[in-house]
Length: 329
Ligand SMILES: NC(=O)c1ccc[n+]([C@@H]2O[C@H](COP(=O)([O-])OP(=O)(O)OC[C@H]3O[C@@H](n4cnc5c(N)ncnc54)[C@H](OP(=O)(O)O)[C@@H]3O)[C@@H](O)[C@H]2O)c1
View (cartoon, rainbow, N blue to C red):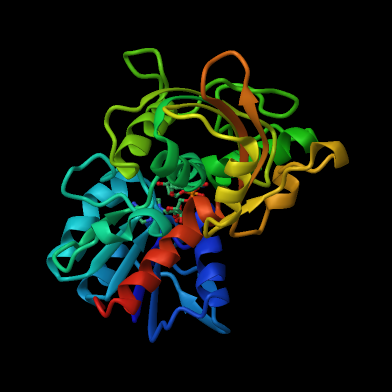
């Protein structure tokens, strides 16, 4: 495949290259791009150095696949030009996720929403991907009526600038800020911009993207997104009200059989998922599985994953691999 990577210097872009190498994606030609600020810089991929190019040049090269992780405005500006050249765009930003004609794909759940005529494929938000991977089999078997979600999200989810802010604060350096407040020794109940309904953009992504991926607009969902001074991955406390009775063992077994999920659930031995453990791993880890005793058919779970991996790069590379396997590229 000829692959362009838009945003190669970013938090996600750098992991994207590593995941493509690890999974031996058959890349015949690689075209890494970033903003004009990175002109002249180089990146290393599969043992070779590549000078970063501009997006305009990558469009002209008509790659088979263009993976975007450069923010929504770059995706909105350039994805259409790639698509009209026949390139498959796999977009990590929020630009296309709500578009009804654009599949929003977690390959283990709904790769079949990609068709021959698809050209833009949206990668869901990081906190949504890890959660729906665990919820999809539960929804299929028991039906989910309502979700109450609280997240504890890593600073790596806000990009290079946010990680630098945390490091600067820890080193006592006064630097550029990604957040409106200090992040070290703090929790910010503020993920993305506030919207008119009082939720933040990140919270509304969890609501809307979950409904789209699970193909069920009826699920009632409320979410609170919290940014915490952690770097290894996102953690989520998820409370689900199901339509039918279940046993905790039944949920453990169902999740143990689910591709991409690892059940880590032995509280008596202090075994439960944590971001320090999930960092650098492609799987989604689920633990603290228990019945919510306050409601009929209520389920509580703790879901952790490396947001840069399954929440972004791994999921995108799996989509590229799917296109190759299905001979769409
Ligand atoms: N971090 C996560 O966990 C995560 C998860 C899922 C999705 N995403 C999404 O992935 C995207 C990237 O996130 P990130 O965390 O990697 O951000 P980041 O660390 O800030 O990196 C942004 C990247 O985009 C490039 N870029 C910015 N404007 C550009 C333009 N006009 N043309 C070409 N390249 C441009 C930057 O290049 P320069 O270095 O030249 O500035 C950099 O390579 C965002 O849309 C984000 O919402 C992130």
